[in-house]
Length: 203
Image (cartoon, rainbow, N blue to C red; front, side):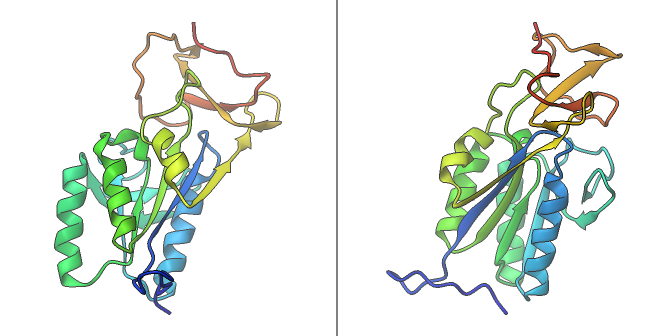
């Protein structure tokens, strides 16, 4: 069944934004893939994007830590997303857009996501809510009040096994410094999920 929820005021298809957020290893991408697959099962036309900077498990597909994979378009800018969306939308109307790791994209992506939702497209987005310094991450901070649906997932603390909502960066086994580069896309050997008690704020 197509996604055909109608606005009471305009009788046009209603779009919205779903944000899946939290720390690393919380299962954000797993949940993201599940939702997009469910939309596809419902006969909605789905298209997915991932930042081209993220090549941890695949250069062309969205992949979770547990191994789930979803075909996607790797992009390096919002303009690339717009161009691909417009091209694919001409072939067949797109009902659902998925964007993984939105914090790695430029600031214009939030306005484009809002634009898509206003046009009746369902936009499902994942992103880290905090960086390794526990400061709000770009794009996710603006999407939090904008999204109709927000799910904040937690992980298991690598140190004590409690629930975790912070991301600890390790460099050669040592805690990262506050002055270290903000974006470093890597695997489990560079990041750990930590709880409030086990997290060490960079200095």
